Structures are given as C-alpha cells and as structure tokens.
Image (cartoon, rainbow, N blue to C red):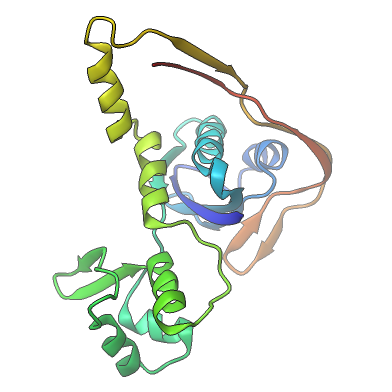
Length: 219
C-alpha cells in the first residue's frame, strides 16, 4: 500500500536553478512547501519499504547542496480547531471527540495550553471509532518513529538486543550482506518548474528508475 511521507528540510533554496535541476533529475516526485529557512517535502512510498526509501531520499536531499539538512519526519500536528475544519464538524464537536477515552493522546502541548495531535492518529481513530473514512493513506506514528530512529541513527530495541548478543562468545555467528545501491532517477526531458500556491514540484516528463543500496549487518 502506498502512503504519503513528509520530511522537514532546512537550508534548501527552491529558487536556485542548480538546485531545481538536481531535484528534477534525482527526486522528481517530491512536492515542496516552504522556503529556504524551512520547507517540507512530501512523496509517496510503499509502506513495506518505507524506512529504506525515506532514508534514500534523505541522503539524496542532503547531497543536493551544501547546508541542506533533513530534520526528520513531519507529524502534521493539528489542534481542535484544525480537526474540526478538516473533518467538517463544529469545534465543540471536535472538542468532545478529543475527550473520548480512546481518542489518541496529544503529541504535544503548544504554549502550555493548546493540545496538538498527529493528523494520522486522528484519521485512524475516525475510521476505527466513528466509521469516518478520510480517504488518506498516512504512515502510523509507530512507522514515523522507526523512520526518525533510522534518520538520526538511534538504535531500536532489536539493534540493541543484537549488539548485546554479539558481545556473548558464540552469540553472533553469521554475517549477511545485501547488495543494493542508492536510488537514482534518470530523467530524459525536463518540465518547467511548476508552482501551485505555496507548493513546488520539480518533475520530468519521462524517465526510468534504478534503485539499489548497500546494507551489511551482523547476526
């Protein structure tokens, strides 16, 4: 299943011609919003390979120009007012929903007063508890956490367990190597940079994709 992932990026000048050409060549399917100080890049990935694909995209982005940095995934946090607006209910109705025992816990409290929830968690709750299908394919909070852990090289529980096991004599016996290389997109023909409101997309009319990456780990 395809899902939409959004990365937070800083230091990328979307008005720079060289940057635009590189984005069109290497990452033509990203939808951009924002400016040089802070921007978001949204793209679709297959859920089962999301972690690997997002890591590939992040590496390519940080190689586009000096100073470009991927800050992590975007949770698309929403307040009660934003929940009401997106769903089409009253603010009071949305506020009552957030008081339900099974409603997702807030991701953060803004300004010490206003609660904010990840939109994906709200969408899941609407489907499961109210039978409301928002028609959006979004990554779960768990998947976003996994992606951020990989982006920031934070070891997950499995990695820690294998490290502990490898410290035991005879505990780690085999090495497995998977040969792939970094995703590369070859675009034959460029389209002009298209802007829609605050969104920017760099794209090519035709192209082919070659995906590979190198991974080695111990068991």
